[in-house]
Amino acid sequence: MFNPFEQKPILLGDALMDWKTIYPKPYDKNEADPYTKIRIILMNGIEVEAAIFSHQFHRNCNNNDLRRELALTRRIEQQQQKRINWLSPVGETPLETTIGYEHVAVDLTAWLAQNEPDPYVKATLDFALLEDFDHLYRYANLLDLDKNIPAQKIVKEYVEITPGRPTIAEHRHPYDNVRNFVNFKTADIRTKLNILIITAGEQQTMNFYMNVGPTYYNDLGRQLYQEIAMIEEQHVSQYGSLLDPNCTWLENLLLHEYMECYLYYSFYQDEMDPHIRQIWEMHLQQEIAHLHRAKDLLLRYENKDWQQVIPGGTFPKLLQFHDTKDYVRRILGEQVELTADGEALADVNSLPDNHRFFWYQQKVNHDVNAVPSHAVIAGHQQKAGMDYRFEVMPNAVAALRDRQKDNVTLARTKQKQFATV
Image 1 (cartoon, rainbow, N blue to C red):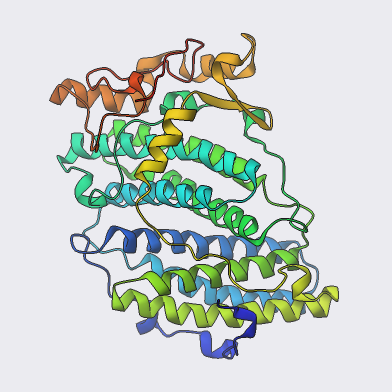
Image 2 (cartoon, rainbow, N blue to C red):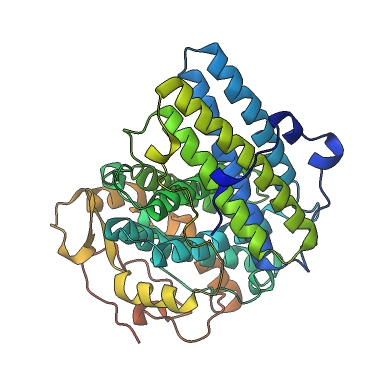
């Protein structure tokens, strides 16, 4: 298996790109494979995380020599981010791109959960999976309502479009978005990678929605983006709290660069589009150079060998996007009524009546008809007589099968009502 620490790095100066290289040929939104699109969306988020992390490190560092090192690698990361993000074609609307963002969230989270050795981290992934799955359904209904475009044209039937844990039920008190952190000194490298990847991916989704949302052309769409952006804030809080706060800045830098190498190598192996595959290959070489510089900085400033942070260095099982319909369906059937209770997860029906979850729900959702995620479905049902879905079989939860009435009580009130097929 591939070990980036054993590769000979290129010179960092050779990793800088000219304008012709940075501005790529975009993909064809009608012809590109959905997995190509979601690799692009994820790697954009990974590079945004790299830049944000580097800026925060820079602002918390009092050594200008080290800050200059960060500035050089950050410039290359920023060039990579621009190159990847500009692969999106001119004719692709923000809402069409949003369908891709939620497709990433579903299939990425499901893959990570299926390949997560830590039960606590896996439970956290499964929990948010059902929420992003529902977001895909809500945005798909907005797309069909406003533009008469079926979202399955975009996802090409790779993922089902049907209700998950209803978005209205996802609004929780901020105290319940905090999870226990994982000890990275003893954690499996798979766990470290999974947490870093999902935190970066969800952070980019949060950033995208809170920036593109106000530009939507009607109030209902603007409101839906606003609501779901708030849920993404919750997701970033819960995933970010899994990261080990005891890692030093330089240990985190090494982990970030290793994660980028891992993802570029994974996607280089899987990519079918030769133009995009060449980009993944080039960026991999750049990231190997970043990784080697990070290990040198760790040794110079903290007198630590890289193997103290990433023992061995060989990549674990590569990330490979594939059909996760059966897994998502199973988790939906088993866990739809879960909510958070402090650092733990609990069935909403088991919470005491005075739990802060119900207090918070009353504060933000006291007028159900004003909740945008519900209003979008109600609007589609009023116009078309039913909601928009793409299902391979009826929803795994009986209470979510009615296509003429949006369920606004499941998972947010104490009335056991779901049954799986």
